[in-house]
Amino acid sequence: MLAIYRREMGSFFTSGVAYVFLAVFWLVSGIFFYNTVIAVGNADTSNLFQSMFIIVLFLIPILTMKLLSEEKKNKTDQGLLTAPISLWDIVLGKYFAALTLYIIAESIIFVYAFIINYLGDVIWASLLGNYFAMLFLGAAFIAVGLFISSLTENQMASAVVCLVVLFVIYLSENLVASFENGNLAKRIAYKAVTNIAFYSRYIEFTRGVFSLPSVLFFVSTAFIFNFLTVKGLEKRRWS
Image (tube, rainbow, N blue to C red; front, side, top):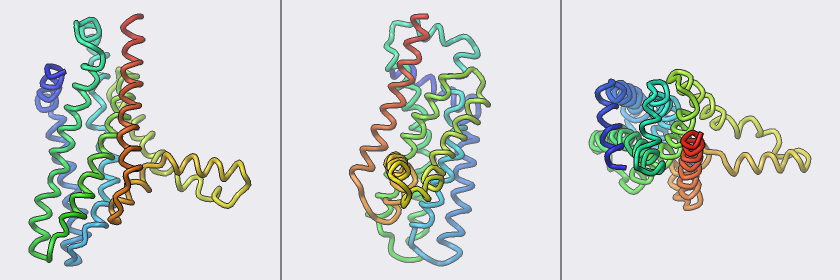
């Protein structure tokens, strides 16, 4: 797994994906930080972290689009699949490489914290809670993106499909909001969708609520999609 991890981290920087991802992430988050904190002279970061959900949603597809689709396009996937390593090593090596780059990007939050310190007292418990909320959210989204990347050899198609899937996940609660007070079937549909919704679980953290069920939800989502990726590669290996 470590060999795959090092290879993928090197690939991120040699291909320029890391520089684009980090630059856009820091630029857009900086704009949100200025508008929600600096411009209003407020040390409260809740609005900032609510906005960060959108940044993560749009940038994760860029981060994950090449993870497995490039291997498939260049026909190097067969070398990986026949190498004397487990499929979990392949998937987790790529997954943790993407997660590492994501953690580097979101750690800009600590730079913002020192800036906020000049506006007022930093509530570190709240800030760290939100930081880990972003980490859990990104971990789940990266697993989704990795799975989608394993389905195609076209990087752009992988990015677009991943963006659409994450956007539908984001809108899912709004799409079924009218079902809350409907008939039994609609209420069941509403309950089912809200139970697997990402946004409301993430927003809980930005409002200072630490929810263990939400943490378990994000972690289990990451595991499920990584498991699906392994199963997909396993099918290709034996075919």
